[in-house]
Length: 60
Image 1 (cartoon, rainbow, N blue to C red):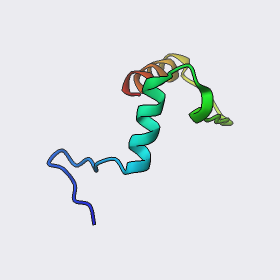
Image 2 (image 1 turned 180 degrees about the horizontal axis):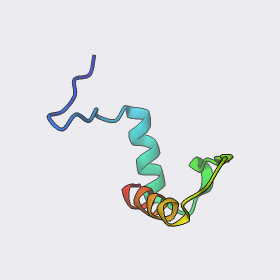
Image 3 (image 1 turned 90 degrees about the horizontal axis):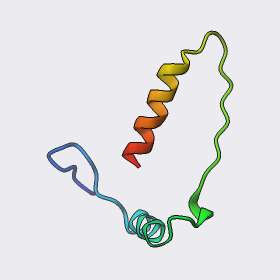
Protein backbone atom coordinates (compact mmCIF):
# COMPACT_ATOMS: atom_id res chain seq x y z
CA UNK A 1 0.00 0.00 0.00
CA UNK A 2 1.25 3.48 -0.85
CA UNK A 3 1.56 5.95 1.98
CA UNK A 4 0.68 9.60 1.68
CA UNK A 5 3.35 12.27 1.71
CA UNK A 6 3.32 14.87 4.49
CA UNK A 7 1.25 17.16 2.25
CA UNK A 8 -1.45 14.48 1.95
CA UNK A 9 -0.80 13.75 -1.72
CA UNK A 10 -0.27 10.27 -3.09
CA UNK A 11 2.57 9.57 -5.53
CA UNK A 12 1.69 8.94 -9.17
CA UNK A 13 1.41 5.38 -10.39
CA UNK A 14 3.71 4.21 -13.20
CA UNK A 15 0.82 4.57 -15.67
CA UNK A 16 0.06 8.11 -14.50
CA UNK A 17 3.74 9.07 -14.83
CA UNK A 18 3.74 7.67 -18.37
CA UNK A 19 0.73 9.78 -19.37
CA UNK A 20 2.27 12.85 -17.72
CA UNK A 21 5.60 12.50 -19.56
CA UNK A 22 3.94 11.64 -22.89
CA UNK A 23 1.89 14.83 -22.65
CA UNK A 24 4.95 16.89 -21.70
CA UNK A 25 6.87 15.53 -24.70
CA UNK A 26 4.04 16.37 -27.13
CA UNK A 27 1.56 18.83 -25.60
CA UNK A 28 -0.34 19.24 -28.89
CA UNK A 29 -1.18 15.53 -29.07
CA UNK A 30 -4.88 15.11 -28.16
CA UNK A 31 -4.50 11.42 -27.22
CA UNK A 32 -5.26 12.02 -23.54
CA UNK A 33 -7.81 14.83 -23.87
CA UNK A 34 -11.18 14.15 -22.34
CA UNK A 35 -14.51 15.77 -23.06
CA UNK A 36 -17.03 16.56 -20.37
CA UNK A 37 -20.50 18.04 -20.72
CA UNK A 38 -22.48 19.33 -17.79
CA UNK A 39 -26.01 20.60 -17.50
CA UNK A 40 -26.46 23.54 -15.18
CA UNK A 41 -29.88 24.14 -13.70
CA UNK A 42 -30.63 27.45 -12.09
CA UNK A 43 -28.66 30.68 -12.09
CA UNK A 44 -25.02 30.59 -13.10
CA UNK A 45 -22.35 32.97 -11.84
CA UNK A 46 -20.31 33.35 -15.04
CA UNK A 47 -17.46 35.18 -13.34
CA UNK A 48 -17.10 32.49 -10.70
CA UNK A 49 -17.18 29.76 -13.36
CA UNK A 50 -14.51 31.55 -15.39
CA UNK A 51 -12.25 31.90 -12.33
CA UNK A 52 -12.69 28.22 -11.49
CA UNK A 53 -11.78 27.16 -15.04
CA UNK A 54 -8.70 29.41 -15.05
CA UNK A 55 -7.62 27.99 -11.69
CA UNK A 56 -8.04 24.42 -12.96
CA UNK A 57 -6.00 25.29 -16.06
CA UNK A 58 -3.26 26.71 -13.87
CA UNK A 59 -3.10 23.50 -11.84
CA UNK A 60 -2.72 21.26 -14.87
